[in-house]
Length: 476
Image (tube, rainbow, N blue to C red; front, side, top):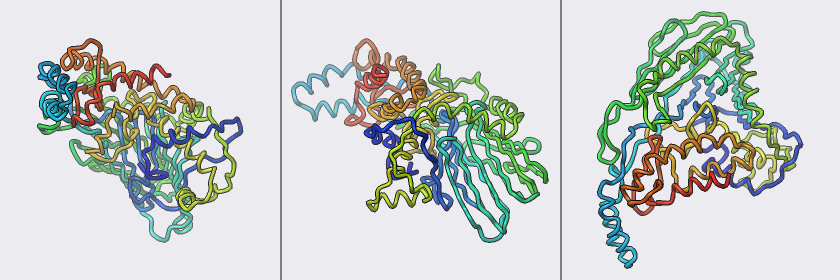
C-alpha cells in the first residue's frame, strides 16, 4: 500500500521504533488530508475494524469504496504435505551433509515440495459506487483521515452548496457507516451501487436494501489444488435517506432530493477459524442481514459515539511529540514531497508513527478473528501480490513486533489464536515429512492452515517458521 510513501505498511511501525520520545503531552491533529480525490487504490484512505476493511477514494462525481472481509480466500482445507517426503528425507539429508547440494535440491523439488505447490489468494469483496448529480465547478475540496477518531471525511462545494461525507467502520456494531449530507434542504441526490465482478449476484430487497450472495468457484489447478464450490459469502448495504424519494432496482438504489442519507454496510463468510475451513452451518446471508437490522436501529450520532467509545481508548494510550508541528496546514502529500526534497518535518514523523498504530489496530482485533496478512486487511485484487497471505518466515511476525511497545497488545490476540490452530496441520506435516514429533510449518500459509513447502525449495522450505512464530509469543 502507498498511503504516505512507497513502503510496506508494517515498516511504518518498525522504522519508528527507533524514536523513543514518548511523553504525556497531547498530540496535535493526527490528520492525513489532501486537496484532491484518490486517483488510484494506492492513494485511497483505509478504514477497518479488524474484520471489515474499506478503501475510500473520495471522488466528487463518483466515489469508490473498495471492500474487504478478512477471510474471503480462494481454495479449501486439505493436507498439502508431499506424500513422498518421508521416504526421501534421509537421502536428501545425506546428500546435503556430503556437500552434494545440487542433487539434494533436485530431489527436494521432486519429493519435498507441497502437492500442489501453491495456494489461492485472498480476494477483494467488491465495491460500493456512489454517483452524484453534481453540475458545476468544484470548490474547497478536502479529503481526510482522522487517526484519533478512525473516521474519513470528504467535503467540497458545488454552486455554493456544501457537501460532506463521513466514513467509519464500527467494531461494536460490526458494520461500515457512511453519512452523506449537504447544507441545502433537499440538496442531496445520488445513486448507490453494490458490485462484485465474479462469483456473486446482487439484488434489491424492498426499498433501500441491496443484498449480495456469492460462493467462490475455483477451477481445478495443478499448481493450486482442487476446484469446486468453495467459500460462501454475503454482503448487505442499507440506504436510509432523510426526505426525498428512493427507488431500488437490481444492484442499485437511487435517492433524489434528500436532506441527508445514512448508509450501513456489512459482510460475512462461512469461514470457521476453529476448523481452519468453511463451515456450512454458518449462513453469511443471515448474519449480514441481522447485523444491518441491529445497526439501523441506531442514529448516526449514536453509531459514531459507540465507535469512538470503543476505538479511542486503544488509540489514545500513546502520544508521540517530536516538536516542529507547524506544517499541519499543508496537505500530507505536500509534506511528504518536502521531506523527499530534504526539508525537516518532525510532525510528519510522529504522524507516520501513529499511522502505523492505526493500521495495525484497524486490521487485527475483534470482531476480526484472523491476524493481519501481508496487506493488513486491504486488498483490491482477486489475485493479490504474494496472495496477500501469511508469510510465516518473517512477515506476519513483523506485523506484531511493535504491538506491545506501542501499547496495542490486544491486536496480538488474532495472531495467538491463529498460531494455536496451525499446530493441528503442522503435526501432520512434521510426522509425514520429517518423521518427527511436534509441529512445523514452512515459509507461507493461508487461512486454511497449509503447512507444506509452498512455491519453491530455495525460499519456501524454512522448516523453523513454526518456532519463529512462537518466538513472538515467548517474547510477548
